Amino acid sequence: LKPYLESLPDTLEKLQPIAEKVGQTDKTIIVLVCNLGQSELLVNFICHARAHKLDLSRVLVFCTDLETKKIVESFGLAAFYDEVNFDKMPMEAARSYGDRRFTGMMMAKVFCVHMLTQLNYNVLFQDVDVVWYRHPLEYFQNRTLNFDMYFQDDGAHSFRYAPYSPNTGFYFVKAVDRTRYFFNCFIKLSDLIQQSGSHQSALTAVLNDHVSYRGLKVKILSRDDDEFPGGFHFHRRKPFMKQLIEGKKQPYVFHMSWTTNKENKRHFFQQLGDWYNSCNSNTKIDSMPEQSANACCSAEPIIKCHYRDKPSKIPCKESPSIDKNKASWW
Image (cartoon, rainbow, N blue to C red; front, side, top):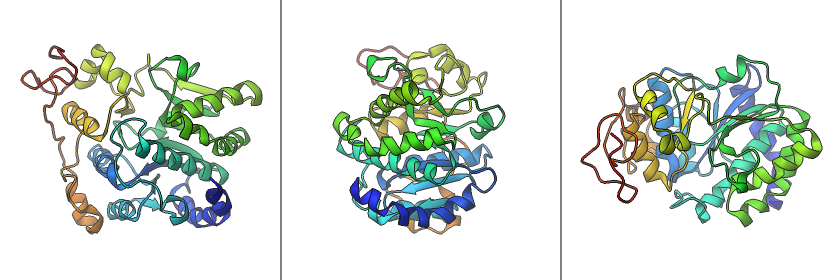
């Protein structure tokens, strides 16, 4: 944390012109954080958005290694890399939720939002395992924002995340003094992430204090609504998933949370018909020119069966179950 805070003025000076270019319309930026190990999910996000003809000009990707920065720029998107703060971040994908690599990348998630709030930008943060059906900024731009922060409902309404159960993989931060103060405090308490192994539980603890004592206004985008579904819906709301697959539900995004690792996410997206990355994980996208990188984007979804007991666009009755002794979802 000390190197981050000591280098922050210089880092913000480097970030400012990039942020100005991306957020010039209304000082709102969509932020993702990615390393090389997770880059195939990032590429799928880009390809999925382009297949749905959704504008990515407001997206800024914080890259924790130069290889990922090259990938992002090969697709024509804005990227930011800072050697002082990101050089020691893990390049590999996490093997499982809460492992050392996972926790290491959580610090990058805190850094990027803190930086942009200090520059007075509204921030829509999302993980790379989110895909868009509609442009999510429309939700926040088409209503009066009476709250300071909006979080996707994690769905896991356990004591650990009480009372809000905010999912830290998709949330919106309004540029006001209360949120700038919140992230100033959170960055200085980020050792909670290392101790708990969870960005989500650490943020929840600090969030509770700031709502109670500082007047921070927080809204949770309820799991009972249909606009921002995620892992809870995928695993526990079969009627909703059937309507989504049939085209009867049109949420803004889908967040493939509640998964063990990157392989789970890829398999679930492929079954759901939301996988558009035609390049395999061994393809060297970072060395491709923009025209070649875009060739990784399939015009149609790449649908594959993996597990009979999970939601799927097509029947996967002959596939094995991922959960022991589970029957076919169909």
